[in-house]
View 1: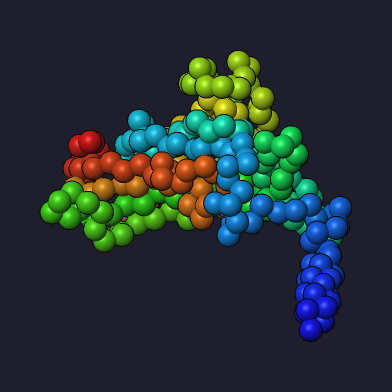
View 2: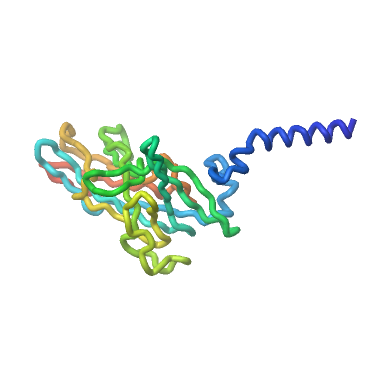
Length: 251
């Protein structure tokens, strides 16, 4: 009976391996660091940690449409860089985006995070669905109430713009990711990336929004497709007042 039980377990194990042979053995599909396994793998990874700042450039642009224009800036305070590689499929006419993650064993892991999108007005490539900007009413305790307006999940070019945390371990003193191409983009440890308020896409239509007090929220990596060590600092909120086509910050 015991021998039969051992043989049965062995056969089941072989069937599991055979069923998953493509994901385990295929060189074209390296082992993915799956979302559901994140907590298990996390101690073994050098992960980025993206921290978003509150907008510093924030104003109303009045014309045919009334818009809030805002800047977006964030930095990487994690143990590893955010590195994204692109791979083009000419037949499907898409360029996929894959996060490269360093393991503490010295190996590399890969995680599919979406696609690279060519942005004509910027004339370079962006990682899709990277940023979300929202406008809410304000509750009595100054929290977000009803969602009034939202941008689509905006694409973003990832670049080393400024070294802001030079004392972090492994922070490079020179930019490692400088180009907005579809081959490789990223954000080094200790470095900041920024889009100024005048840049195309850094805007929210408030044409039909009356003057008053509101809360704005900026979120990076809103779908958490990019694997990080901490998602709790990917949002920033600010109370504002819109009055006579002017914008005043309250916090």
